Amino acid sequence: MQAIVIGAGFGGIAAALRLRAKGYEVTLMDRCENLGGRAQVFERDGFRHDAGPTVITAPFLFEELFELFGEQFSDHVKLVPLKPWYRFHYDDGSHFDYGGTLEETLAEIARIAPQDCKGYLALLAQSKRIFEVGFTELSAQPFHRFMTMVRQIPKLIGLRNYETVWGMVSRHLSNPKLQQAFSIQPLLVGGNPFDTTSIYVLIHYLEREYGVHFAMGGTGAITQALGELMERQGVKIELGVTVEKIDVQGGVAKGVMLADGSARTADVIVSNADAAHLYRHMIQPSAQAASTRLKLAAAHYSMGLFVLYFGTTRTYPEVAHHTIWMGPRYRELLDDIFYRQVLADDFSLYLHRPTATDPSFAPPGCDSFYVLCPVPNLQAKVDWEIEGPRLRDRIVAALDRTILPGLAESITADFYKTPEDFGSEYLSIHGAGFSVAPLFRQSAWFRFHNRAEGIKNLYLTGAGTHPGAGMPGVLCSAKVVDALIPAALAK
Image (cartoon, rainbow, N blue to C red; front, side):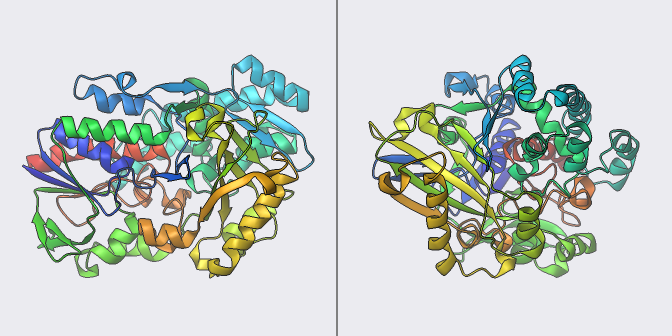
């Protein structure tokens, strides 16, 4: 039987491998020239940059894909545990190192706010309880039936998942700096801590249980290893190919139509395209279920991303692998990004310095960096042709006067991506960095289903589907599809 997978992000790659392990003849298509979706690799003047995800928190999800074929992930990719996991740099010049052993974390908390050590332990215990339900039980659980959601409500209420991440964290921690440090996790999947369901507090336990890792060679090394695994297993890969439409006849997905006018048929189609783009542009509204059209009309999208990539002609050995550079405002800045939809004068940043762990990312005596700056998505109508260069300069100046002294003189080979690039290159609606936002009203059954609503033989993976964005989320979405397809084929 034939299967077509649209989109070669991690969700699409994982789905292709899982379908191949079931005996399908699989064709994986992507409009990019390389595998990885948003996990592209850029090279400029001897500097290498992972374009998108850089943090590995659930390596067992990659291990599972190799084990499907009797192989070991560790034979192909070397993961290195990081310490600290993240360094938080605050506007007053202070810092907080998060990661390492539990004792080391408590010592760092005690250095800043001794009264919060007990609260952190309670938060971690709550995170474990949420993890055991939200991740272990539900992340690979199909939610295409409403009663599946209903049955989980008592558990979720018992875990206080009606609270926001900020609400849960601030109940346990009193120090403002620690409240910020332990509530930023939703931003890693496109959510505002002040309105994202506290189920995402499970990330704390996920990090504590499995660590935070970096793949030597970068995330691109994982993509390459997965590509080689697909080739060994006979998955057909077609790059530089854009799928424009899904051919739906009588409520059944029969195949795809390509931008060059050609058509392909398949028994099963898995879309790893942005879910909102799929329903807006690739399927006729008349072929969609009313529930899908309602979700699309009411969808609230994640923030946009401004990503600056650059090298330096010197090294900064005192800078950690991952730095969260906090600006002077927290909640107010997030309000500007998510609600007022204005590009503020201030910002907070995620700074990635892969050369802290893998010097091959830059020429000798140099460092490689990328800076991710949350910004409003394209609904804000920001003129990025004007604001892009201005924001680049403001970020460089801010880093120069704080943790990267001399950056203005040593920066080289820099370039950036704006929400407009996310829209044009990845077909992300409104240039959103993480598809629809991780609100409670857009989670589980309320999110775009992994089995297309009202259309047989069409399945969805990726950030806009259950369980959500981030590498663990999209890899788990492929597990959901894996669980659904046998039942669908048996009919």
